[in-house]
Length: 353
Image (cartoon, rainbow, N blue to C red; front, side, top):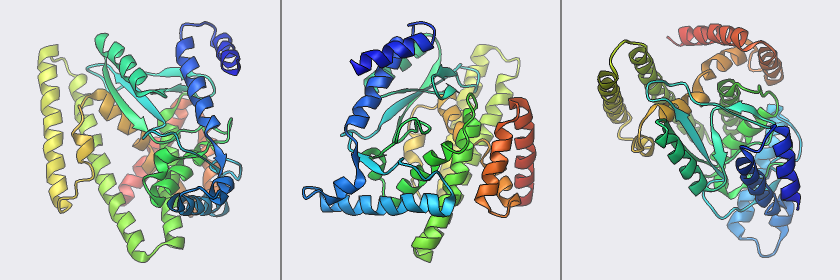
């Protein structure tokens, strides 16, 4: 009954029922997730809890306290409960882009506004929708997601879908998702995700500095360096493709040139991998079908990260002041915000040279 009421309410709010089946699966999926949720202390103290899980959740609780105590992230009930979904991902996101454009399609949702992806709780549903888009001539990318935020509308739990990756990944995800509750701009996915990524990077760095060995912190910094090189390679590839798509080439010639650009990207990755001493952490990413949606999905999370890092440096690493500056950016029009972020980004990149 609750599901039916929620679905009907959603139908009224969106002004029609053309997307009611999508909203219904969203409501049902989230309700099922919440039904599996238990307070972490209850799980920890239960006699039947696996000892390994108990230790993991105890460490998660410490990470959650660190988030509010040291990073000034919201001190609420988010990530103070646990749910085992019995699957590897909580949702599967569908990204879509035209054949000759890196501009991702947007979908407008309740609560979160317009975003550049569409999430499904069932992998088959995501694949089916992606198939419909492909049949219409659109390039798609489907990606499993270990976590999502309800922006404080619900108390989001810790999930087995990201607990399985280890403490550092748990810290990254918790810091990232809590950051969305500080600043979130409807309709600007790149701004929202880049801000959250900048918080997660700084948060994990501070968490490791306080709790880990110098060797582990050094490994994190090395991993960040590789990640930045990976993202730079993709950014360079996107720049080449944008130039190509803006040209007057005929479709067949443009298609062939696009294939060549992607092939060159893969060769550049092989060279980068060799410079890393054979580190193969990005092999799975490069083994998937490569298209505009795949490349565009990555840019959502990295586009403005250097700009936010420059802003944090301007505030001397003071996170509360940093959050206020980010909130001020959020209050600007999108055009004004892009100009401000471009200036910050340029200053950051110039200082790195």
